[in-house]
Amino acid sequence: MVMPPFSEHVTFKPNVSIGINCGELVSGNIGSVSLKRLDYTVIGDVVNTASRLESAAKPGQITINEASYEKVKEYFKCQKVGEVSLKNKSKPMVIYEVIE
Image (cartoon, rainbow, N blue to C red; front, side, top):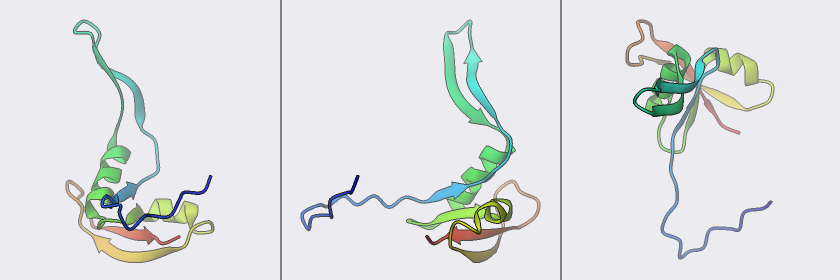
């Protein structure tokens, strides 16, 4: 499916940032059965790190960590951003921007 080109009259152009991490996580309905409050969600350090990578990204930018880069470098063009200190991480993390 081909997306139609943006019209000059369109005022809304989404400008999101994305952080991607890889690894094991916990997913499922999490909450309280007795309170009838279950939500499908994902949790774990991998998820938290992806959120931190998203926070480090500029609008329109996709950032990944070094482990993710090693898995995708043959399929996507990436550019090293450098070391970044992420919230609640003891060591700076090398991150990459996915270009194409």
